[in-house]
Image (cartoon, helix red, strand yellow):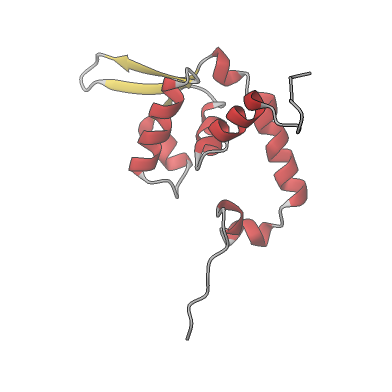
Amino acid sequence: MADTGEQGFCPRFHAAVELIGGRWTGAVIRTLLQGRTRYAALRAAIPQISDRMLSARLKELEAELIVRRIVTPDTPVRVEYELTKKGRALHEAVEAIAAWAEAWLPAATVKGGAAARSTPRRRRAV
């Protein structure tokens, strides 16, 4: 078991949760678990993500050696993304989170977007 210190804090666990728990990161990883994918296909598979956010997540995951960017010098140049061995090792964790979400998050909450927000929206004074 990992060293948790006096108060149950494990720096490795915390770093892992912060990394894969980033906004849209789980969706990107889960999509790439299906195999090598072009940027446009990733964008289409995650309809609510912006181009800027997708690009940032891919760069972050590439820097962490979770995603590999593959450039094929065709005309036009073909760019694809795939999970590395380190990224594919997240398969069981991602599927466990997906199963938990199916069992415990009501569909209405997810459809309304509340599950994606880290803090509740404030109501405007009328």
